[in-house]
Image 1 (cartoon, rainbow, N blue to C red):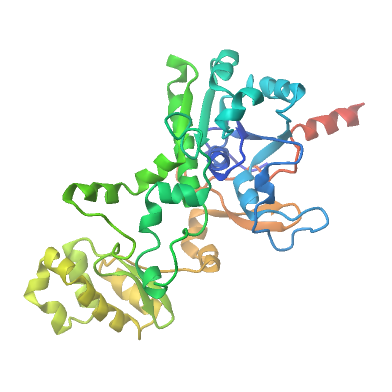
Image 2 (cartoon, rainbow, N blue to C red):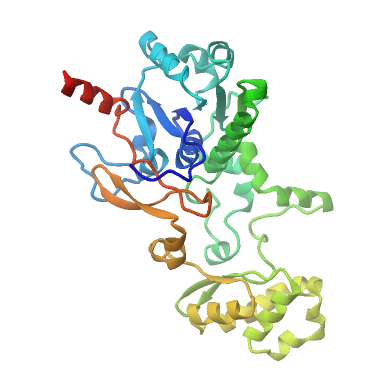
Amino acid sequence: MPDVSNAPLTDLRVVVRATGVAAAYAGRLLAAMGAEAILLEPPQGSPLRREPPFLDGSDKDSGQVSALFAYLAAGAQSLVCDLETEEGRAAATALLSQADILIEDAALADRQRLGLDEAAIAARHPDLIHVSVLPFGATGPKAGWKGEEINIQHASGEGNLLPNGLSIELFPERPPVKIFGHFASLQGGIAAALGALSALWVRDEVGGQYVDVSSQDAALAVGAFAIQRFGDGQVEHRVERSFRYGGVLPCADGYVELLTLEQRQWEGLVEVLGNPPWALDPALKDSLERSRQGPAINARIREWAAVRKVADIVAAGQAVGVPLAKYNTPLEVLRDPHERVRGLFSPVAIDGAGALDMLVAPFQFGGAPLTLRSGPPALGNYGQAGRQAAKAEA
């Protein structure tokens, strides 16, 4: 059994009924903090189990392992519970009577039939924290709308802003369909986890609460700076949204990212560049003037970086306090000594794929990394150990 002595939620039980990424990720975050997480799955399993990409080496005879499900379900257990049947709803009710938090993403039109509507849950389980996370929330004019990741990204404004910087410079002809992955849904999951913990914080005083989370709202909050620009009449767009100078720089053997927000950082950059005459122009001591001349400054910086190695640039910049970092490949991230020391990644056993390094959590408690109870569960594994022990005793 892994050491969970620094995990803050070891006394909690969380039940997760998730068909999408947001609800599943909320449960995953709580599981990483030590909560016992139990997935309610239909007889055929969560649809997330069938989401590509699939892990290399997974057994094609017994079913390929979804990389997405493996990550989202790590540390959880699985209970097969068909909420379309009276027996399944009774099993869910029994489980929820012993739970602290329910996280679910059932469509509003289906909730009463599945026994997951707000009023019924509150009546049966007055101390339960009931968290709903839907693309557009459970209240308001869009509550009944369906939404995939691409819809949420664009409805939150991020579709108008991403990709930007070097990406759009390199591939200006590509349409902004969506950025890779599940950006908006993960924001919804974070908001759901935080909402659950906030309600839990005051449960002793107010009892259970219903928490309504909209992934659109959560993703919209990430772009709050762009919204603030409306006040001065500016509407940002991915084509023009980038640092006036800096950002991602192509080098002779890879890429670095540069960010200079403070005067001392600009002065350090000038030193790293070798104090070229153009950078010593007195006008560039003013940050507003640097912004105005951003494209010209960036052209100079990129010309300088293009013939130099990443390691040399990073070492020179960090020596004088310039925020510079290498853009690592995924494999380089896993092998990075800094990440290893922090314990961000840990080998996790995945049936059908072997032990693979997995991000445990993007945070720590007590200065020590967290651990996961297990890899992703086999379908219906909840209670199997107890049943097997009972059979052995018999």
